[in-house]
Image (tube, rainbow, N blue to C red; front, top):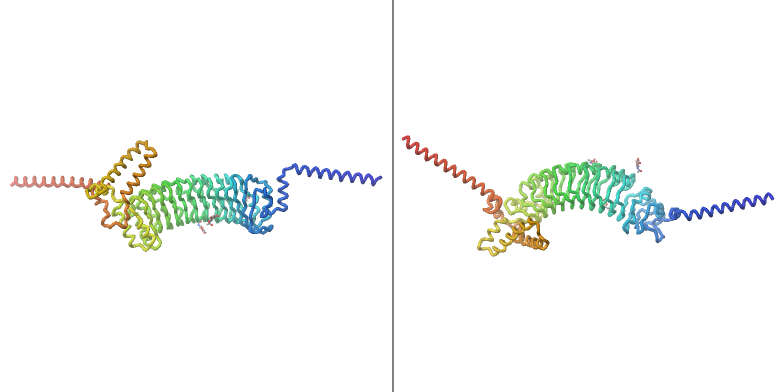
Length: 507
Ligand SMILES: *[C@@H]1O[C@H](CO)[C@@H](O)[C@H](O)[C@H]1NC(C)=O
Ligand SMILES: *[C@@H]1O[C@H](CO)[C@@H](O)[C@H](O)[C@H]1NC(C)=O
Ligand SMILES: *[C@@H]1O[C@H](CO)[C@@H](O)[C@H](O)[C@H]1NC(C)=O
C-alpha cells in the first residue's frame, strides 16, 4: 500500500513537471519570437555563413571558420533591422575581426551604429558604415575603442555631431565623415584623439565651424572641408592645429579672408581655396604661414592682389590664381616669391584673368626667360591680357581698320545692356542675347598672349595715350600742372616787365 501511494505521488509529481514544462514551452512560444531566435543564433550561427535567406544582414568574410575571420563585409538589406535583432548575436562567432564594413543597400535599413557588436571586437582596427541613416552621432558613440585606427562614415545622412561624439580613441588615425548633412561643427566634438592625423568632413553642409572646434587635434596633418557652405573663418577657427600640413577648403562660400586667419598653422604646407567666392583678401590674410608651399585659389572673384599679400608666404612655390578677375599683378606683388619662382619645380598660374596689357606685366616676360622651371614657363606662356579698350576703339575708328562698325556697334550695344539691366526688366531671351554679345565683345577685345607681345609695345600707365583711365587721370593732372606753371610764367614775366619799367623810370 505504501509503495502504491509512493508510486502515485511520484506519478503525480512527474505529471506536474510535465505540465509545467509544457506550459513553459507554450509560454515561450508566446513570448517574443525574436528572443528565442536570438538564443538560437548565439548558440550556433556564424556571421560569415548566415544561411537564413530572410536575414536582413549578410556578411562575406575572408575566412569563414568560427573565430578565424579578420575581415567582414556586411550588407544590410531592406526591412529596417533593430538593435534586438538576433542576427547581431551571430557576430560573436568572429571575435578576431580587424576590419568590419556595413554597406546599407536600401534607405532606412540601418538607423543606428551597432555598438554592441563593435565593442566586443577587441581587435577591430577599421570600421566602415556606408549609406545608413544615422541622423545624429550621439555623445560618446565612438569612445573607448583602444584598437580602432580608422572610422569611415560615408553617406549616412548624419546631420549632427554631438559633444564628444568621437572621444578617447587613442589609436584613431583616420576619421572620415564624408558625404553627410552635417551643418555645424561645435566645440568639443573631437576630444582625446591623440593620434588623429586625417579628418575628412567634405561634402557636408557645414556653414558654421565654431571657434576652437578643432583645437584638441594637435597632431592633425590633413583637414578636408571641401564642398561645404563655410562663409566665415576667424583666426580662432583653426586654433590649435599646429601640426596641420594640408587644409582643403575648396568649394565653400568664402568671400573674404581677414587678417591672420591662418596664424596658428605654422606647419601648413598646402592651402586650397579654389572655387569659393573670394573677392577680398586682407593684406595680412596669409601671415604666419611660414611653411606654405602651395596656395591655390582658382575659380574665385579676385580682382586685385594686395602688393604686400605674399610677404607672409615667402616659401611659396606654387601659386594658382587661374580663372579670377585679376586686372593687375604687379612686380611688387610677386617680389616676395620671385626667387622661388626661378627654381625648377615652381609654378605661378595666372591665365583666365582680365590682366591689362601694360608694362607693369613686363616682369612676366623677364621671369619666363630667367626661370629654370619648365612648368612655370608653360604656365606663363598661357597668360593673356586685355589690350587697352580705348586703343581698340581708336584703331577701329581709324580708316585703315575694317571692323570699325562692328566694334563700335558692339560697344554701343554693351552700353545699352547696362542701362537695360539697371531697369531690372530683362527677360531670359534678352539675357541670352546679352551673353552672346558679351562673348562677341570678349572676342573683339581679344585677349592676347602676353609673352608674344614685344616688351616695347606694352604701354606704361603714364604713356597710355589719351584714352586709358590712368592716362586720363594723368593728363588732367598734367593740364593742371601746365596751367599753374604757365600762369606762373606769366606772373614772373609781368614782374620782369614791371621791374624793367620801374628801373627805366628810376633812371
Ligand atoms: C571610457 O573609459 C573611461 C576610462 O578610461 C571611463 O571613465 C568611461 O566611463 C568610459 N566610457 C564609456 C562610455 O565606456
Ligand atoms: C582615410 O580613410 C579614407 C576612407 O577609407 C581613405 O580614402 C583615405 O585614403 C584614408 N586616408 C589616409 C591618410 O589614410
Ligand atoms: C606635432 O606632432 C608631433 C608628433 O608627430 C608632436 O611631437 C608635437 O608635439 C606636435 N606639435 C604640437 C604643437 O602639438
